[in-house]
Amino acid sequence: MKLYLFDDRVADAWHPFALTRPAGELLFGALLLRERLERYAGRPATASLTRPWLRSFQEPGAPVAVPRSAASPDHERLLLCSRFVPTIGERFEGRGQRPILLLAGDGVAGCYLPAGHPGPATEWLEEPEAGPVADHWETRIVSGALVGAAWQLITGNPGQLLADLTDDPRSRGDSGEPPSGTFRVGGHAILLGEGVRVEPGVVFDTRDGPVALSDGVEVLAGSRIAGPFFAGRGTRLLGGPYERVGAGPECRLRGEIEDSVVLGYSNKAHGGFLGHSYIGRWVNLGALTTNSDLKNTYGPIRLGGPAEEVETGLTKLGCLLGDHVKTAIGTRIHAGTVVGAGANLFGDSAPERWVPAFAWGSGSDASVFERPRFVEVAARVLRRRGIDVDEATREWLGACWDARGAD
Image (cartoon, rainbow, N blue to C red; front, side, top):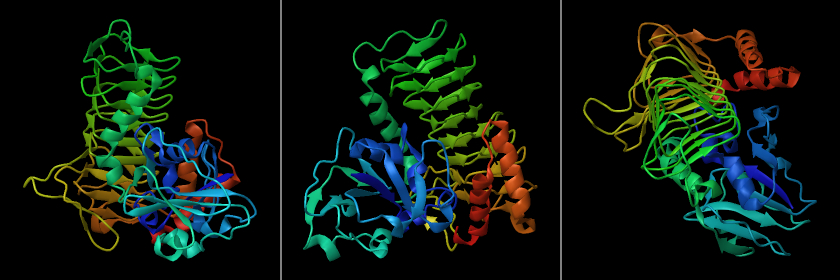
């Protein structure tokens, strides 16, 4: 049986991340959405069925990205919506001669198709609904939920982190001693990978959940880490208070960070506040870049969008920054700001709540970060972290720039 993950129209609208990556390659809790579905299916994903310009997408561990029409009927297959978050411990069981429709809550989580069955049309993968197939397929209720909007990856992250880390076998029984010279408050576990280095004086606050540091993580003195917290492989915590954060791999983080997700290979290496936000890959936040996550009126926050602002009903919400975003020193970002991939923010004014992909500057004077220059700068950044930049990588970066109007 082959596993396919598909992005539907809801995932297509997950600005600003949908322009540069399949939805399954977003971190939620201590796992990528794809990794979570691979556990549920008991096998690695064969492909992500997603937007056509992502066919050159490549990252370590990620399956190929292909158009939604590419799932062949020649073999048995399980198609799962990339927004589906199964309940921890749930596993797909079924298989047989009849198709199975999988329902989670009030949405479609996916379907199982035996070999030879043509399966749903591309249009169904874009907007899956039970009606057209429910009379002909077996219907099964599965345990879990569908993430609705991109900002729910922020609001739901602390709870998902707590569930993931509590489920870790290392969290059971004796939680062990903290590293030598450090301090722990609370009874949840401290989970350390291979080669973790923690300087004396670090404080682990585990009253509200475990703290997990993956292989090769380094924590400098002056850090206070409050769980639930997850740092991916090779991340460096350079000092400051960190509360309910998921980050990595290979991030550089300093300053006050709370209730946020930093997808990987991103730098916040200087002071400044980051709160209730989601940061894509290969982002660099200049020194003292700070976002607001609370209005002065304490009222609900509207999220920026390409056509109109979206009412979230939240009183706490920061910003969403796409892949390869860069900010100048001292950049200020309003609550509810969405910054498109590849944008480079600088200037005297704070950006508007919606910044188009590949913007160059802030406010009414912003221009466009031209394609050749963007590709070259992005390649330069990847090489600094030892990532090989081949022609396929350049093609992917260029294709994202070409599709910028879709964001």
